[in-house]
Length: 242
Image 1 (cartoon, helix red, strand yellow):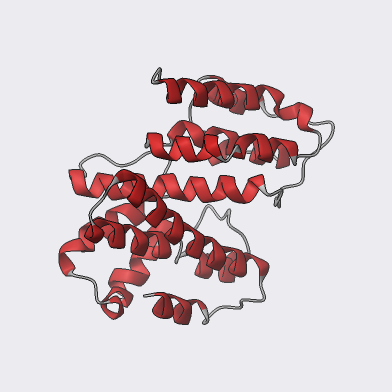
Image 2: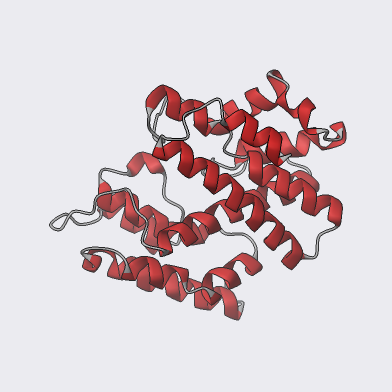
């Protein structure tokens, strides 16, 4: 599985920092998928399936970066393109996956980058869609907590009020609202509101990820309110009030 994934990625330029970042992110998300699966007490079969989805969820990103040198193209849905690679171009056949899991993989990857999950999923499809969405956010927050950031924070620019309204209402923020670096940073605080599993919230809390993220920011005064809302939300989730 890992060798086939690596072989695919080697078709792209690993000297490109965005390609390298997404390759490393995919490996970490696969590991986080195993971590969450164990905490959830899933079967070995579901754990292995979650790991596979975690490894493959961003496989569409590499072509996006090659074409646009960006993660932000409105013309390219990397979740949709991942399924093209896997199922239309038939990369999935090289991975020796039982066909009974194809629908679960397809639905999980399609929904991993959408603002909300589509209706009509089976219980099993929904489980894996929720796992990949949780661990994708978990890895992003872990990465940010280490002070790694590509968006440029502006000293004299406040977070857009429309984005802060989403955060105050404890809602995920549509990326279409992002106007600049400060907005892009603020969106990450809202990730927590879309986390499904209490076990994921517990990991975020135990590792103190949001405080570490905040402490590594320049001009952190712009994000005081967002951090307060997020920490209050986490406390309430852990107490069972959310």
